[in-house]
Image (cartoon, rainbow, N blue to C red; front, side, top):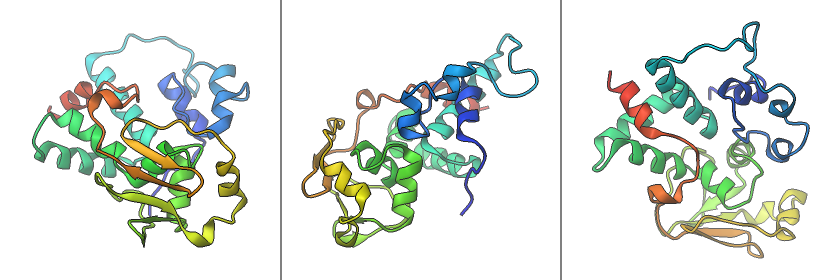
Length: 206
């Protein structure tokens, strides 16, 4: 499976804002954006006026990086969103939020989407009682996501039981049971990821 292997902090610096790719580090003074709030590379500190195309491209890149997708994965998801009823941009965000790795992150079972993707890949979760190790698996309303029984003794998940977890309104979580339920698919107003989806639609519509 193809994945991004370069330094995660470079992505935040490139987009000029925190993408929260490294969990707790992003909230500390160790965050690279706190130390070097400019784009990486030789010309990172030079300021250039952004063209319309540049704004659209940056928004697409930012969305990809927030959710940890590569170009082909993101384009395929956009094409699926365009075929569904409703507004393409909103469909795209809802589909991104419905990925299993994102739901695991939203439930508080991982400190970042990157960690959630790794935990799913390693087979630590079940969906409706069946093991699912595909991060892109699309959850549906009513699905129950649970930490696999054999994984509950892991220090990682024992630690979660002692935490206070805040989750979005479309998800419920039972920390003691290490399980959560997708009450309903999110609506646009439920998604707090700072993305202007209309710019992505405009980019791909050219």
